[in-house]
Every structure is written in C-alpha cells, then in structure tokens.
Image (cartoon, rainbow, N blue to C red; front, side, top):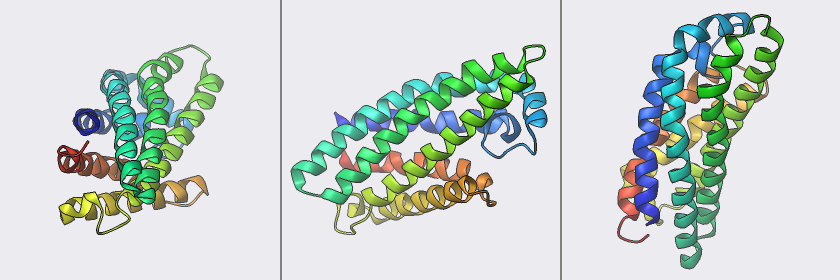
Length: 210
C-alpha cells in the first residue's frame, strides 16, 4: 500500500511541477522575483496556474506523506535506519508542502488582489518562500538518506538510486544557499521536479515489498 500511495503522489507531484512552471517563477517560486512588487504584479496573471498547482499539489502531498510513512515502516522492519530516517524526512517535507501548495493556490492570489495589501502580501510571500525552501531542504536530505546505501532497496535499479541522490543533492544545496542568502534559488524547482520523477521509479521498486 505504501508504494501505491507514494506512486500516486509522485504522479500528482509531476503535474504540480508543470503547473508551477506555467505559473512562472516570479509569482510562484522562491527567489523567482527580484522584489516583492514584481512578485505581486506577476500574481494576477498567474492565478489560474497557481490555483491548479495547489489543487493538484495538496492531495498529492497527502498521498506522498502517507506513502512515505508506510515506506519508513518497511525500512524499520528491515533494520535499515538511514533509509527509514530518509522516508520520515520525506514525509515531513510532504506535510510542509501541503501548506506551501495551499498558500500558492488560495492565499497569495487573494492577497495580491487586495487594494492596499502590499504589506500583507509581502509577509505572506516571505512565509511561502521560506516554507517552500525548508520543504525542499528537508526533501533533499530525505532523498539522500533513502538512497544512502548502495545495497539498499533503491539501488535494485541503480538509475533510480542515483536519480534520488542527484535530486536530493540539488534540493539540499540550492535550498541551503537560498536560506543563507547565496545564489541558488533557481535550482530549487528543478530539484523538486527531478525528485518527483525519481519518486515514480522508487515507487515501482517498492511495489513488491510495501
């Protein structure tokens, strides 16, 4: 059941990533705008895609969270501590992204449409950016731990194991850079997209076990 739920969530996450791309980085990605004013101005034109991103993302995040918790329980029974910790971290990341996707769909467009709402939008956008970034950081660390051992489940298909490692590294490094004020935010979105694709492969590997 865990692999099935995780796989459904991964498919939904791929669709969510597409909608985020169509919404544009200025309106819907951390560090995508050079200023709050630019982000606010871009939001009305991107509202439809932002709404779709959130509506696809929120249920997908729930599937991912439950699926990864079940995969963690499978690794616990195997005694694979690192992999268990990785799947638990991915469950936490999925929970964070429920809030992120709700904000992009329902909160930021409404805030941007309010007359004189610049201060409120600035605060909400800052919260959105930091939650997205720490969610990506958590997901990156989780992916690396889940694929930590080359004799683990994910390396039954080495391409999937390495894809999880690469996605995890991109997410972790780009999110860390953004959090400390360095360039790198533009790689957070691609890192999540790569993780979504790798997750589909991971779900297929676990299908016979969990």
